[in-house]
Image 1 (tube, rainbow, N blue to C red):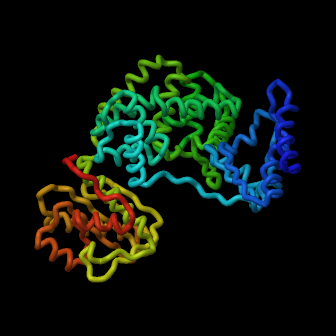
Image 2: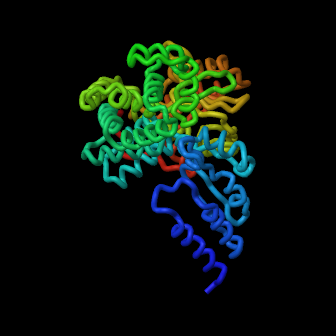
Image 3: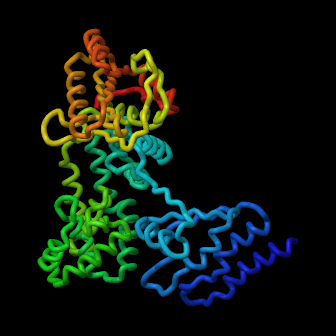
Length: 461
């Protein structure tokens, strides 16, 4: 009965009635202003979520609706949230300049931490009725780079094949299948094909993207890609053309472009990089798809184990999340066997299994950096065996190594042992100022920080 609201609805319906039957590339600005107009009139909040927002600007279509959106997004009662899979073009070109400049705050979606990636794997397994062991879940999350889609895709693939994932070998086999013919393959192939269509230089672009994935190391060399393009496909193109295509690929987040230095590097996405190698062999080189998939499965099944003790790694994931959840807060000292509460700083980064050079005892289980204060932590999961002085001395050596490499004012050391410590080790840690926790202490810290306790039952990894 509301005449204004009715008029708005009629306006929306008329938009569709007026569209021609053939393909439409220019939307009417009425559609963009309709949500704001409705919320302004009703004095109510209408929240707009727009996904894949980078598609508001497509170089192979001669239209741009961004200018029409300026007024639509300025309403305090009609906030707009936009997301996209090509963050570079979204942030730098669409929201970072022109009509929408200064009208959006940017909040990049980071990879899940090890703990939350583990939780997603566990919950996804429950939803899809797949069997993923507690010990392998953090390894699955790590192999997927903390990407929620990859994690869920691997679990779905395990459920589809009615296969359990309890070891690294089983995880590798499922990953190989999904990368080459499963859910990950379908999604990434669709994204890559759409971006290549957007660039509109099909033959050369596919080769440049594929060859960039084959590059040794992280930095990409346009001259080497140009040489390989000639060797593999007999296409003689200039360095400038290779450079221009690499820039376009970086806008789709398929590679990274360091604009200030004028150089390129691979994206920090191990699954995408592995996919591009498989996709390139099948779609670019034209090799037999079944043979390529079989070779990938052989490669993954021959991989060496990355984690000698799965349960110990899971404990590290939980320890790191305790520190992250407690940033700028204090934790009860009794859980670290300290008289005073322990203040946790705000960490700039938190790395697991970080290596400082080549050689033995150069890997730190947990390394958190907070400016002048750094943390190193160690996890030992030996059922029925107490930790003595030697492992603690090694932890202190690693703390000294971090101090030398990173130059903080001091390094805090924390040791977790599932079964506890010898009396000599406890005395030694008290003298050296080392924080230490047992299984009971760690569970109490997890309770205190609102996290799930270490799962039971356990088995050796």
